[in-house]
Image 1: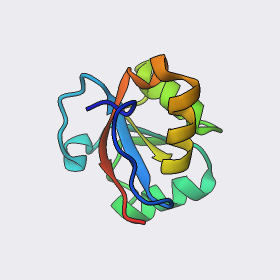
Image 2: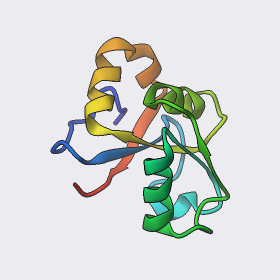
Image 3: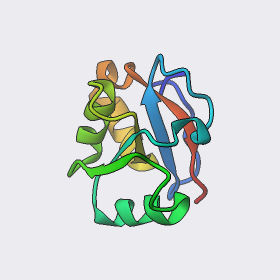
Length: 108
C-alpha cells in the first residue's frame, strides 16, 4: 500500500513513511537507518519514542514535503509525516506520494 492510497487515522497521529520498495516491514527493521523530521518538535518526539541511539542519524528537513522528497530521493530512509500534512501532500503531489508508502502510524 502506498501513502497515496493509505487510509488516514484520526488527526494527531503521524505516518512513518519509507520508500515504496523498501523491504522493511517493522519500525525495528529501520534501526541504525537515516531518519528525517520536519522540525525540532518532531525531532524531540523521535528521540523520546525510540531513544537517541535508535536511528543512525536524525536530520531536520524544514517541511513535511521536504521530508517526503528526502525519503523518495534516497537521502533518508524513514520520515514521520503528520496525518493532516500527508492528506494535503497527497492531493497536491500524487506522483511524489507514489514513491513512498506508510510503514506504520504513530498513536494519537
